[in-house]
Length: 173
Ligand code: NI
Image 1 (cartoon, protein in one colour):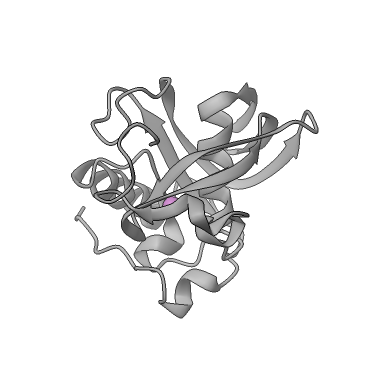
Image 2: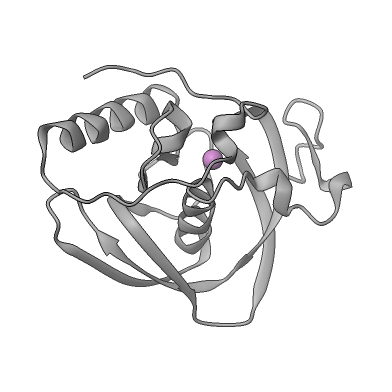
């Protein structure tokens, strides 16, 4: 187990498409997930995708109890999600502020579906199947985008709504 360094936007690896996990509950997969968990916790992240620590596999973790980075956010149960498939359950799209450990000290307003169904597996190969909305839906869409080589700034439609946390008006973010 170890805290890994997180790749930053500009690193071409973050633009690659992640491969499916073929075997579950292996020592390698469990170590990867433990490393991701420790790395996410050390950075107070709400989620982390394997490509962010340089591993080209379809593995994301997310979860939010109280988090000083998102003091007003809804709670999200800690989840390991492997080989995910997402389906929107509505056409409704909402914009809200996001950050990313690969884009440090910045925030941007990102449009996301408000309700989604997500399916996949945990590290033991048990299926995960949830309909969620709000912040939970946003986090899953953000993390799964990493598996397609998409970083949130690529989804911002109004780049005036993107900037350094320290410079953005506090009442906005
Ligand atoms: Ni991210």
